[in-house]
Amino acid sequence: MASFTRYATIGVLPWLCLAPFQYGYAISQLNQIQKAMSCKSTELGAYGFPLCVPMEDAEFGLITSIFTIGGLISSLVANRITDPYGRRPAVQINAILVALGSAIAATASSVFALSVARFLIGLAAGLALCVAPSFLSEIAPPKVRDAVGVLNQLSVVFGILFTQFLGFAFAKPGSWRAIFVISFGLSTLQFLLGLRMIESPAWLAANNKKHEASIVAAKIWKSEDGTRIYEADDVEEALLRQREPLVNQDQPSATIPQCFRIAELRLPLIIVSLAMLAQQLSGINAVMYYSTDILSRAMPEAAPYVSLAVAVINVIMTFPPIFVIERYGKRKLLMYSVVGSIIAVVLLAIALNYKMNAASAVGTLLFVSCFAFGLGPIPFIIIPDVSPLYAVAALSSISLSINWATNFVIGLTFLPLRNILAGPDNSWPGNIFYLFAFLLTVSSIAFFKYF
Image 1 (cartoon, rainbow, N blue to C red):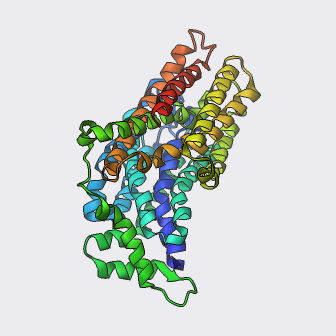
Image 2 (cartoon, one colour):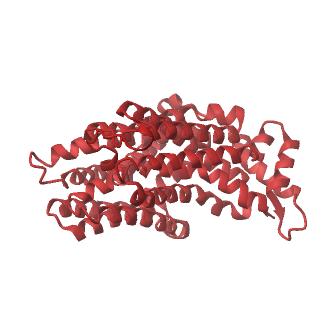
Image 3 (cartoon, rainbow, N blue to C red):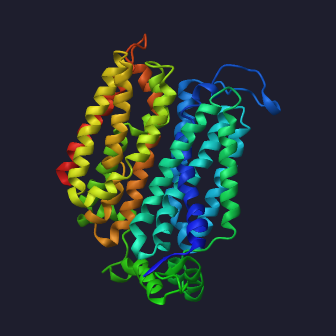
């Protein structure tokens, strides 16, 4: 049985995890710097750049949500890079896009420039979300496959947490640009490391490059006692594992249009679509994007600290599903998560409306906790359970598209809609979360009817 070599452990894995880390970083990078970035000052700061880029809530919503448009587009075309050219080039393109977007954002003086920057970073994020999980799976020795698979989600939540920490230091006019400079530095490091990294051995073998696959395997796998670098049986098992779906399926892989036409696929299509809708309509990304802004009205001094706590809880609660999902099952775990999330969102709405500071913090943290152990991971992993093997890839693309599209709508409309529902004197800021609770309830009832 093989395990990772030192090269894989301290080289390949950290390099590969930078891609999902940057995705998490991008999700939360505007959260704490919103006020500093969009202040009304026209003064110039260091190096002649404006201290702020004045904008209204709707414009900030556009900058936030256009990130998801980029993610949607790249997730739909990612296979045109990863299949013919390999996993490693896709990771390198991811780094280039993040570096370019971050450089534009760090020097931006207009809403248009920031929008372009966020769109490019979104393109990178969609690519990362497609290539990193498969790449990690393809390089993982069988005995640590599950643990390695968790690294993708852990990298995302640690990226979110890291940005929240940075917000304390750089949420000031002019200083907010450092958030993008740091992202530029990380993506540059990712690209430079990638120049010395390996291609997926499974992809090499699947493309008739078995000799190159053996060379790569010798670099990243070793036997249990460490006396041999390369163990043929382990490599063959891992390569067969990656190609198994293609060998065993009884018919050609389904296309996206066929998922809407073939009767057998309609129920799986309904299930995965409702799962993704329930996940996003819960309002979780509104909290991730705007938690500081949401809480600042009720608790202006403590809001940044609660946002940091949200990120910490998100990291901690990523671990429990690993240990309990087999015991309780996906359906029961998801049901607990949905019920807890609905209660937490209603609590948050009440607390915001009646200026109950402690309850606002509790509602936010409870919501993130309940979401993270069920609604967060499970919609992504139920697709093979409900779908015939030949349609898994197409249904995955559809579900990811629904995820990005709903994410975009929520990111774009949250602030304006919150202001409308809060009333003319802005005294009911929690009303928007009653809407999220209603949408989550309706979509979840529909989902559990079929799942």
